[in-house]
Image (tube, rainbow, N blue to C red; front, side, top):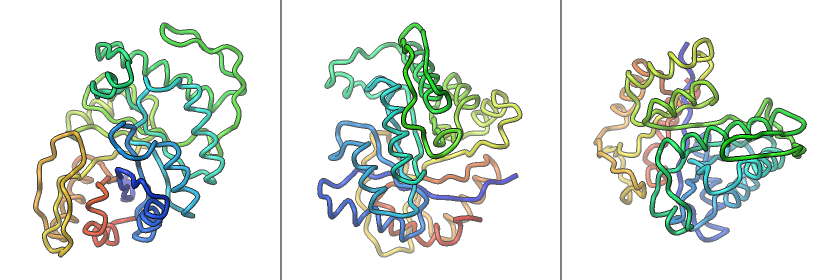
Length: 282
């Protein structure tokens, strides 16, 4: 069964209260489902605080991370912050999580940049702690990287059993973990092979998963708006499309791959609005 389209905006943040609030309200007014902020050191706003302000300034817009790096903070403390934000936003939080892959940020923070396998193993333990915090009265955990003892899970998230968890990756191990534990999965880039990995690992829960993809490279050619270059650290291939072509492209991607949660960058906000108007909720 096809999932209905919804759209999220990945923002870089604005170092002004009035500008950030106005931006969040504009995202909501144009019909986007979510406002997402990366967990990187090069953007002007810290993720959690900025999301809290955006949630306070809006009424229906969902707010989320794109994505929190497991190694930057203790997973139990992150779970507590997210549960608090979920309570205070009336249940409008999406929790994006990742193992971390930006060497420069690790170096700036003085953190060891371990081998990918180690980071993924530590991420798996962190995810277990976060989900336990959301779903149990008390957290007890003993692993190779984390130990949590008799931690009372307060506050409780408003969304039950927990805020939707998004995990994105290009690797089979992470996508397999996501298939078993996440609610939203973003294979990067989305391919039939990767969807197959997810389907195989998810089993019966596959039909309940939401599949996401970014469309950072789509430039809408029938718009008169001028967009700035992408801020993404990942190279983006530009695809020139009219609004009609973009609509057909996304419909085709959903038919082929099942992707229905579409993310754009803030520079595409206005240009993509006609596409959002045509497809959201359908």
